[in-house]
Length: 53
Length: 387
View: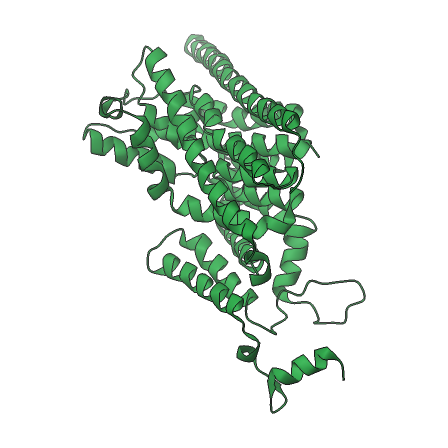
């Protein structure tokens, strides 16, 4: 049976779960931002098309 | 005369080597297990595209004197390596390209719209990776090495190709078992998840009806998402690139709308061919000598526990979000955060319908479900970056 370095193991768990949560939260924020930017861009484009003869 | 020649003589009749004379109990059990997989695939239709080739690979790899699993070595003569050995060596152990190719197909098959329409689902997909870490700790407690514990834990991501890729890199000696556990439990999510979800939710919570209409996701968003998500994840966790890069490249094929032939190929012929090769390899990586070890039962147990804890993690965060959110959220959708796509989402839909006939949770559950694919890829990338 191999000797377990429990402080390393718990650090892997903490960092690993932390990385997964952080990236998923960043992706959620990025998605929301993307939605807003694309919406604004498409609204502007639509308005420009309506104004154009 | 050498001992090998004696053994050959003992297994031959009239100069012909007879396979059944070389069968021992372990081979027989593995052949029966392979036949059991074929039965489940054909008769019960349990994940047939996966379990049928795995079962066939198990049977072929455990028949004596075939030479099918002999791997190619330098200086070998022609036809000395077996087809399964060649596939195993170059597809998995040496270059590990088959799981990466599968991700390309998965990306092309995945519609991220339900996730983009409800970005909160990303967090549920993260919580449903809990089982990865509980089983990682459990594996260490039971005496597995650190790389083996990472490989066993990743079963909790409920993603077969991610499990194969990670194990092939970190602990190839247990790859057949971890891969079989991942795919078997994915086939059994309908048995594993409902009791856990029922245990953790009240009837009133299962009754919660979510708003039926999700916002429209524009084509521009669907094209930009795989590009930006790929850049963000790979820049933060570079070792996740083989998985994340392939998934989002496949998804870009699908959403770009300008490479229809590539998208169709990735979704059909390509993923089908790779599935045949990869699943045969998994079956072939289960020779009796590797399976009949005490650690096999432990891996299977830890894999099951990983699935259970991942489901629990998603549901518990779903409950918290349900309490905090203004809009009604059925906590069961958190259970779909494991990346068994689309089975987990279907189970949540079924359970929602059972609790309340007016409850349509499928699209709400698909968000966490596809988020789970990304979450497990990130978790695998983190484990890989430790080495």
